[in-house]
Image (tube, rainbow, N blue to C red):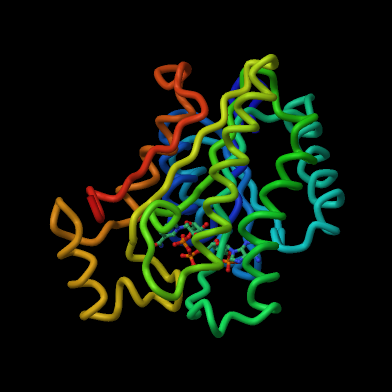
Amino acid sequence: MAANSKIALVTGGSRGLGKNMAISIAKKGIDVVLTYNSNKDEADKVVAQIEALGQKAFALQLDTSNVKAFDDFVGKMTGHLQEKTGSPNFDFLINNAGTALYAPFAETTEQQFDYVMNIHYKGVFFLTQKALPFLNNGGRIINISSGLARFSFPGSSAYGSMKGAIETLTRYLAKELGPRGIAANIVAPGAIETDFGGGHVRDDEATNKQIASVTALGRVGLPDDIGGVVAFLCTEDAKWINGQRIEVSGGMML
Ligand code: NDP
């Protein structure tokens, strides 16, 4: 971390969309802290890619479904930042980490519901709360939602409604943090080819074709369709965007 660079925290930056976000953000001249849940090797590779771009980066383990781990995580991250930059603060919080749940409403168990809630809603709520004292005034929060919060596909009732909850939360963040000059926005990707949900959007030909057929631009999304939008929201050019939901889906289910 360099004392004169802005710094972004990207949760779930080891793979998929978060990896693309972390690299795209580094290309804007911003240093990156990224988290992984279990894939330290992949996270280290992303750190190396960012360093090759001339930015500073480090990776820390974090299970965003475990609120009890957050104080320790925030302590570690801010300790590293203090050591490297002389300040524990950072500028951009990107709440991206997450996993899929495909289960029909009638069959969704309480355990599945709690897991999705912990990762996609409770974790985002309390990680943001605990990180807030260290987010510089004028900083930004970007919460990653999903097209599934706007349109409904069978099997995503729990997941889609948690994403809906963080969309509402984001507008409250924008309202309450405005006095500190902190903007909060939502990026809602359409279906993207990643490991998400066992990689079924990428690897299942029928699913891939079906999604392409309901997408105005005629294909499924790729990680590179998303990271640049998140990186843009971390730039000066995006300074007046606040409390908005930006869907990045190639025009899915219009
Ligand atoms: P991937 O499965 O490709 O990557 C998931 C990332 O999240 C990894 O970095 C993983 O870390 C991390 N992660 C998983 N579980 C946890 C956990 N319990 N605590 C902390 N980190 C965790 O998913 P995507 O990149 O596709 O998804 C990223 C975000 O985008 C999610 O919020 C998802 O809901 C959203 N999204 C995805 C869409 C898609 O079609 N792909 C569409 C719309 C939204 P590790 O590598 O260590 O496992």
